[in-house]
Length: 369
Ligand SMILES: Cc1ncc(COP(=O)(O)O)c(C=O)c1O
Image (cartoon, rainbow, N blue to C red; front, side, top):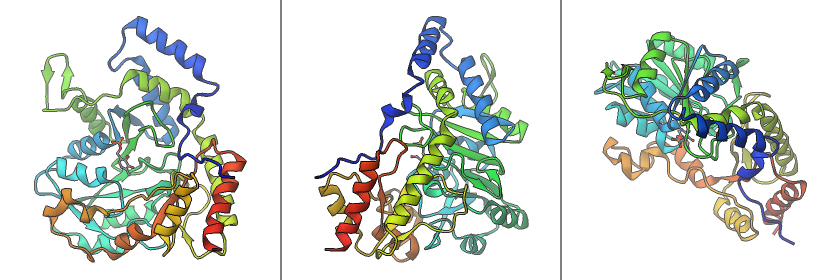
């Protein structure tokens, strides 16, 4: 008998916090403190403490977090920013939005993460920064990134959208670089009920610039120092995030437990997992399997009611939006191969034993046909 397996269970994240949260939302509605209210400041303090940075600035989305961070770091027209082709669209989009040029490199075939040797080779006089992406929840080796950046005078921005709580060298991602950029969109491990994002960083001057930038570039009412944005973390979303933050580590532990069951029960099949993570370095935002029979496995799982998906079917350099960058098929072969060979098995903390079993049995039954 088939067991339906969804990719997410958003409502389950409110179990046990719902009445407190609704009480707080009611209080907010009657207070009128709707825009950049105290709830936003309180969440920013709590999030900065959790990540281990002096500053966290709430913004409207993860995409805006990247755009505002690059802008505040004074990256713009004509600058080159190196990033990886195996990522979500927003990473490269942000570079284009500030007028800079994305220089795309390949990823490693085992970790699926940015290939730092290729970054080193692509550095030019115009290179200002590198954006590393902790993709699918797995931390990039930040000591190696910072070593490379120091030697070449580059800024480092971390796209942390998929990796809350993941560590590199014993420190949380987003706590070690010029900026850590966060998304709290509904599918993320820490999620709002809508769009939300944040930037974490240490430099007080850049933090101050970001606080102005997200709020029309204004220092005080009617005093606009820079042409900024309207990109503020919504106050109701801040209340939701504040109430969920304390549960993130528990959810990550559950994600890691399910990931280890998958690895054990799928061991020996003709497939590979994203590899290279020590304990604590992966928070399993997405659980990837790589196989030459990807399309067949995908339809087999979907036919059985398992919501498996491909992330991402087209690498950044082959997306129509970036055609002007001039890349061609074959330029970044590892990212292209992963786009053809990987799929994500459903993995979230509210999965039942029956659902986990059904996913494992279904993958096994595909390969034993
Ligand atoms: C790696 C990565 N970067 C950036 C983003 C953009 O975040 P948002 O959807 O909140 O704009 C996402 C989320 O979709 C993402 O997965």
